[in-house]
Length: 198
Ligand SMILES: Cc1cc2nc3c(=O)[nH]c(=O)nc-3n(C[C@H](O)[C@H](O)[C@H](O)COP(=O)(O)O)c2cc1C
Image (cartoon, rainbow, N blue to C red; front, side, top):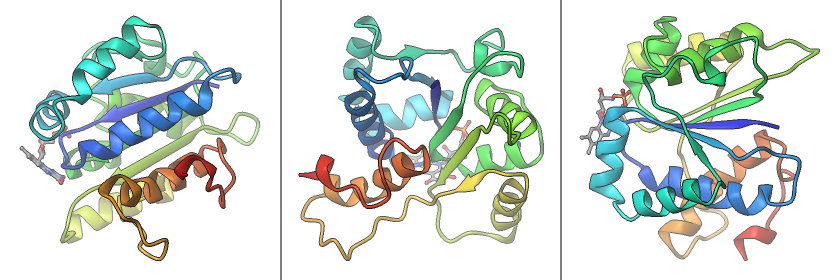
């Protein structure tokens, strides 16, 4: 299984960080290739602003071979092509700009191109998963229409909306309620999985 994570310039770098930490933990010793990480330029800037400690941690994981990084302007990477094998793209956090580019089929950077590839190549014989975790409020009619278009095309819209019935005590616990939904959509954990939160 090959998973790519796209990080854009929406607020919520902590969602990307928690997903990557859990993903690395869950995929060790499983039949999953090292996940690929792709930043937009604005994604890099917002992570630097909100969660600067994520960048050196990512660099260490990449150096250790636990993650690979693709440049967002490099269309020669495997996720840019329908003829290569990759299974899932999670865009977290997803800006409204990125949602608009995907809905419009613009494909002018690697993340929007990889999303385009997933939507066009997704078949029952070879299912591929696109998950967008939008982080914006309030949503305009344009945002809603773009998200609707992506859903109709086969993508999953999984807003970064923590749940509170589990009574999270920390920001990380609240964020992890969203991460759990992502991992369950990727079928890496069952929907009611709790063990990794303890
Ligand atoms: C600190 C900060 C927070 C932002 N938060 C959001 C957000 O929550 N949602 C959003 O859609 N855009 C947000 N933006 C604006 C995006 O970064 C901007 O629209 C950008 O063009 C997105 O580019 P990208 O999709 O290539 O990453 C934020 C910008 C900054 C500087």
